[in-house]
Amino acid sequence: MNISHLIYDSYRKFGHLISPREIGRLRVKHRMKVVQSLEDVSMRNALRGLELTTPFGKKELEELFLLVRGDHLWQVACGKSNGNGGNTPSNEADSQMSSHQSQLIDFDQFKTTMMSFSPWAANGNPNLVPLLQRLFRVQL
Image (cartoon, rainbow, N blue to C red):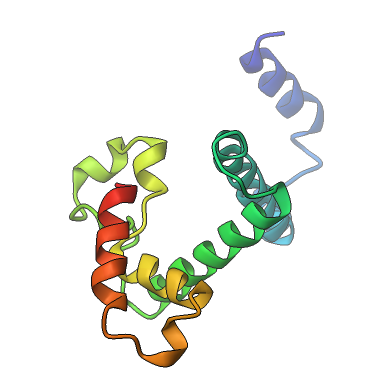
């Protein structure tokens, strides 16, 4: 069925029952559920390709993904990141970024994540930051 016919029929049959105000109310009511659903789909798509190329299990990858995403959201909320992973300047090219590029993180996010897993982070090892810089360049 053509979508334009479906929309036309819906307005013709139900247009008098649902006002724009009601549509707005329903959008607000269901917004969080829709956003969460989109984030879940995004996570599954990102992890699907990694499951075959990494020794981590599915649950471990999910936890790592949530940790990195949470850190990224925190940095964006605090104004420490430009929202595009910190790898490219914010401009018109952002809208044309590939999905792979939109998943990239900057060095600060990588360092924070790796230090949370590293036993060396607790003892103030002076070689930790250069090591993390080398690892970050490898993952690019």
